[in-house]
Length: 150
Image (cartoon, rainbow, N blue to C red; front, side, top):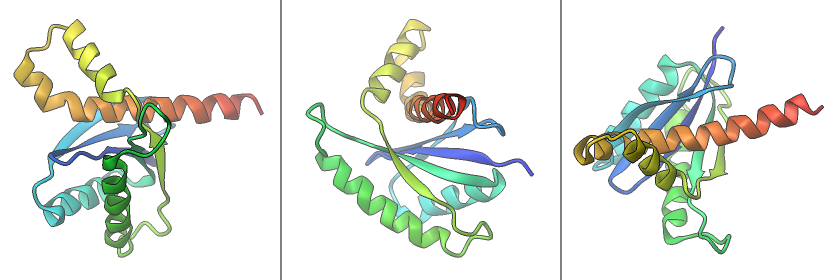
C-alpha cells in the first residue's frame, strides 16, 4: 500500500501542504489552506491525511537565526497539540508527527518563484505549499542520505 509523508508549513494566515512521492524521495507542493478557522483547516488536513494514506507528518518549526525558538514556534507547538487531538480518531493509527527546521524555506520558495518570473499575485497563492515542499525535500534528503550511509 502506498504511503506518503505530509509536510505542513504552518502560518497564521495560510497553511502550506506538501506531499512526498510513495517512495519518500521527492517532495511536491500540494495546496495551501486558509487559516481563519482551526476546525475548517483541521477538516481539510484530515481529508488530505486520509486520502494520501499518510505514514508521517512533518511540521516545519520556525527557528530563529540564533537557533532559538521564535514567537511563531510557540504557535506551531500549539498547532501540533491540536493536530494530535484531531488525528486520534483517524483510521490511520499512531501517525507520528515530527518537527523539522524550516529556516529559509519561505525565502527559498520566494527566490525560486521570482527566478521563474511568477507574478506577485500567483506567488502569494503558491508560496506556502512551495515552502512546505522545500522543508519536506530537505527532510527527505536528510533521511535518505542517512539510510544510504548505513
